[in-house]
Image (tube, rainbow, N blue to C red; front, side, top):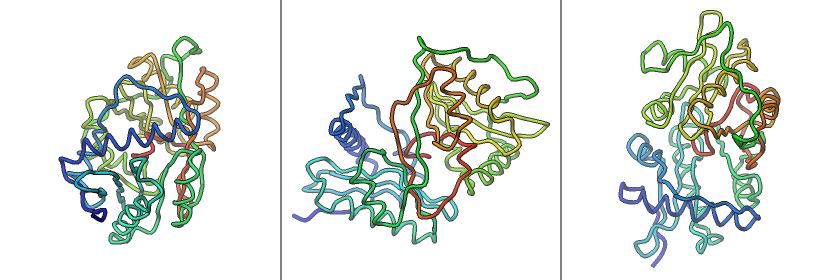
Amino acid sequence: MPILYRPARIDDIQAVSDIYWQSVLDVYRAHGFGYKRQVYPLNPSYAFTLQEEPDGFFVAEDAHKVIGATISWVRGHHWFLSHLFIMPPYQGQGVGKALLGRALAYGTSLKAGLRSVITMAFNPASIALYMKNGMYPIEDIYLLSLDPDKAGHIPESLTGTSCEGMGKSSSQHDELSLIDEQVLGMSRSLHHRFFQESKRASGYLLRYKGRAAAYAYIWTDGRIGPVAALPDAPYKDVLKAFIALARKASPELSMMVPGSNKIALEVAFSLGFTISMPYLLLSSQPFGAWDRYLFHSPGMM
């Protein structure tokens, strides 16, 4: 029976999660990373994507068993490959290429001319696949983590600014869109709705000279991101303010920092952060002011 490629359904979500973890752990083991977890959680973005953007979610099925999946999203002219994972026994058989083709077709159908993806920097097979499809490395990304036993001094407050809890007002929506447009070149209301509806995240707007100059999401597990700041924001102080907020939520902290974001790297290393994992952003064309941005995750950017 040939492999079937079809749109995802709600009852595929657990299988997609299992494939993700099998694939990721297989890559880690192959490259010497002894990565272990107590639990392997279901990513809530799967159900959100299936509800809000189902045309970007495909699975591969062999004999009624899901063996691969891809998720992509489109914001304006930007298509982003969020997930592409294949069960290890089926890798190298063209399944990934076939799923990627369907994901790319979704972007083409919406006239998204910019294509990008984040992948592990030590996974040459994935990098080669994306380069063959016109996406080339434009930015290194480093997942940094902070061991609470090795943390340096984290400031308690930031003089001259104020952080406010993020709501869903139209005025705040406009402020978030303005920041995203200037930092990323796109607005992304669906992203913000997903983050704001999560019970594990708190959103903050930081005001400087009377206007919204930066935003951040702080997660209960200590993840900081995404973070975006306007050009005139006091960026070093902004980062310290958000790190201080995150420290109140969790003793362990982590953030995904672009390699060209020298200020964020300087702040992080001065506080005791260390590199946990390297990633790579590939794109069909340059975009983003990465010196003023921290990523949330490889899938949500």
